[in-house]
Image 1 (cartoon, rainbow, N blue to C red):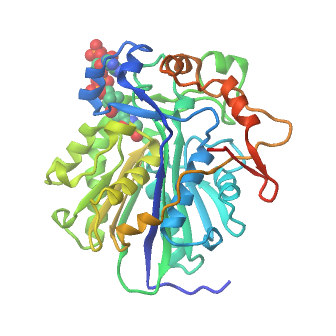
Image 2: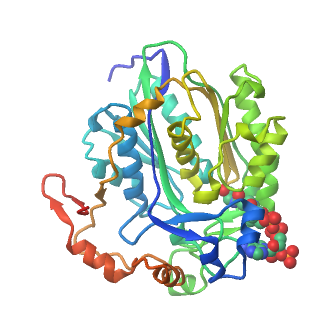
Length: 402
Ligand code: UT7
């Protein structure tokens, strides 16, 4: 391997994917003691997406990732490394990134996952940047993807109203041109917050048992108020550190892409930095909190909606379980019109291992609401779709006919 260090490391492609199924606040009113008004005023969330039974974290990641590769104008085999940031992997092992590699048809890349919860996309961005800066790789696919609705207790109003599913991706590439890309960064980890957001069972400390399942220990738990306090304390200071390392001032930043957890948290970041809310990109109203996917989805939407132009100074900033926080201050260099190269979302499913069939993955309480909506996301439908799937013998992956 020759280690040719590049002059800069830049975003060359971007993409995102959100499932079709929409879960509104009104739907949640049928499940827990809550109201549209409470959710909107306390969080800014109006609706979120829910993955269908045939979708997985890897399949959503593959869709966003393929889009990012096509926007970059690259061939899938130009990607040397795939990093998937997620707290909701398809399996404990193999890494979700391995399934993504197969699904997008890449034959060359190294692939692994990274776990930093909602800060995962930003952590993965800095790792990819370092690999490329060192000369080890030239094109890295960074994906944040989550299927959180499989890990939510739809009888717990403290958590089930907040989260949604989706994936966001960028390709980072070595460039022979000076300037552009990441100019400053900051990552933090605070173990005091280790059990503020967590999933008690399913890992080696508390493997799955009938008892752990019965007590709901495989669902996500959160101390909302403590997490809120941490976020409002930390996000602005983490962003500021990255901005200072870049040699910039907060007012020099054209657009912040903050983690989309709660619009009140985003407002407090703007206030903490002395900036108007217009400098913050917000889409939490439509997706809820998609954890590691949120910054990637927001970045792709910001570019595609004309909020970003060449030369803009952008800050990606996130916080999450751990507690963790991370920020990247960067100069945008890619032509936003390159999004026109994005391929449509007709994408491979993830191969099932031989002799294994997953159970209907959607929590039953949620299933009932979605079916009342006219969606048919039940196991019966999943089976019917599986039978209609076309097997591609060359790649051994499967495409759902349009
Ligand atoms: O990516 C990181 C993930 N996590 C986060 O970012 C979460 C950060 N935390 C938050 O965003 C907020 O703390 C929440 C949105 C989770 C909660 O908002 P809050 O303003 O901090 O409410 P609270 O926890 O202080 O609760 C206020 C009241 C309580 O009732 P009492 O004790 O005052 O009678 C709660 O029981 O609101 C009640 N409540 C609800 N009411 C209706 C809590 N959840 C709900 C609900 N609907 N869904």
